[in-house]
Length: 274
Image 1 (cartoon, helix red, strand yellow):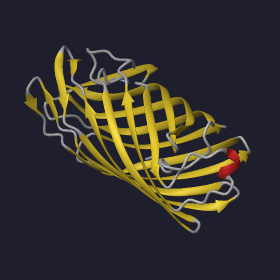
Image 2 (spheres, rainbow, N blue to C red):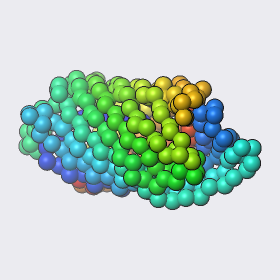
Image 3 (cartoon, one colour):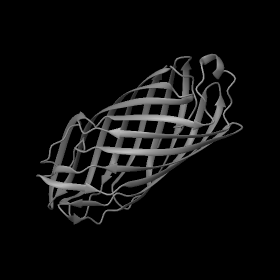
Image 4 (cartoon, rainbow, N blue to C red):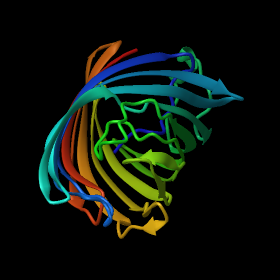
């Protein structure tokens, strides 16, 4: 859930973001997996950097996200209760975004007179498999595989409201060292997000957020799992400026329906320095 994914900002700005998130809930896996009834708690610290760019006259952005997590919980493995505690890096993510309609690249002085109407943008995000991973465990912080996610979105301003809609698809490489040396493959995951954002003034804004994602059926050593996704989540976001260069963002979210995959609630806080 990520409101305001496609907005126009002056070029050449640097953003440093630090955050904390807590999530808790169950974990569902493919039908052939020996893990059942998992209940996990994850504390995550996040450091991120973003820079706005001039992309041949269009506004763009590059960002990198570096999460570090502490995971604890219990589950049944082959019918026997097991506990897991681990901490380490998650897989980092790198993204390039560009707004190709309605958001020209502007200097700080030019941006003072900019008013958004309809804005259309696209992005590509890549995740690198460098996070904590142990093939003898079924639950890890890293995934031991790459993914690439192209995404396209549209944003429309109506008075104090901004409406956002985006759609994307995530493609995964194979994990050739999944739980004891097996090969894990996964179909693409298709996703769509919608956001209704209200601008209260003085830099304060809030949003209601929803997402739906489907697909992602897994195959382990040639055996297809009965774990195709058909999941939805809702959330909210509140952004509070501290001063000209700093702001704080609060964001809770929870599952609405879960066919397969993780079923959890999450809350977090982020600090952004410009």
